[in-house]
Image (cartoon, rainbow, N blue to C red; front, side, top):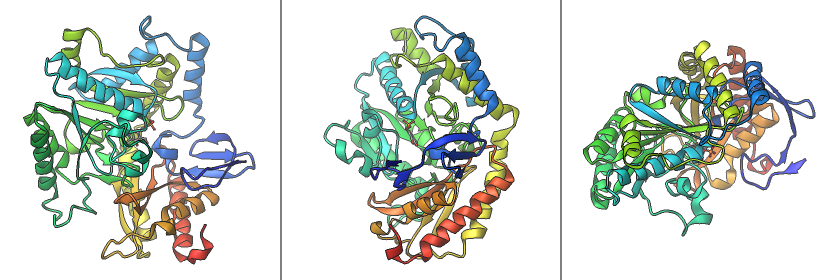
Length: 447
Ligand SMILES: Cc1ncc(COP(=O)(O)O)c(C=O)c1O
């Protein structure tokens, strides 16, 4: 048994995983866990899928990897075509990565190279939002409004400007729900003007915030409004769809819901569904063309970018999602799941908000529903719910700090797209038990 050193989901003694099957994972003591959050929203078609494993094995038996500067491959080309057709006609270029953080790094670098190619080299500055998470590499962490994860690295992060989160449940003080979108668009415009439009390269945001907020969809009209502001000032719009994209929200691109296209989009988790690490940065035809014309190549990537077996895994996962109409299923069943969570949990006064899209649902717990006052941090409500759920055979994703960094308790639900109706019912039942146990237990009974 390995002792967890306090970072993560609050589980102290980690069990040893031995196998997976569909929506379930099993440890070496025979305990079964329903994967109600895809770990951190990654395992979108469940575990040990035979078709995906066969596709990976078939690729490995031929060749594991053709290095990208020497070879192309069927898997890479077919996956690229599929990503572009699923992303929509405005997109024309894909670069591959091995993680969400790398997909963000590549997005930032594509933006910088684009302006360099256009001979606007002063456009170097990024604007991002508070309460956001874009990854753990230095560049991705620099644009993350996530004090707890940044703290040990402050002083070595990029100089980035931040604007307010787009959170209808916790709007900036004095801003009503109806005013929120206009307020945030004006704030972004003012920030671009303050930095200087000739210096701003891109604005980056999560269409639905993940771990930093506990699933926070932007208010209606927000994405279209920031799209307009960015276009007005020749600032690129980067969508971080690492967690929310590839079908998780019930549309293949999360921003399809808002009817807009970003200039650059980062995807990862759902792309190969956790079978092999794989991410991608997808960008508009004109952005990539400008770089290629001026400089001949997109200067981002690593030894294993476009790894052939990883592309084979991604292709197999995406083909299953398409063939089984799983994105439409997520949209339909997501609404039912959210309703079931409401029905099962609304009797607890401590449920402040249940929100999200598709199979990306967040629950926010508060001490007082009227004032939205959070619990004291040492009550560890989110971790306690996660721990109790885990002990009872349910994996969910507890997150802290959505209120000012130090306070706030949220739990993310993000099951596999093909979880059965019975499994979704089991999820609701086990989560309700964990919530009930946590909220009714005296403080002294909690670790
Ligand atoms: C929205 C978002 N962006 C980027 C990342 C970084 O991805 P990775 O952990 O694969 O590097 C994450 C990870 O959780 C994320 O949720």
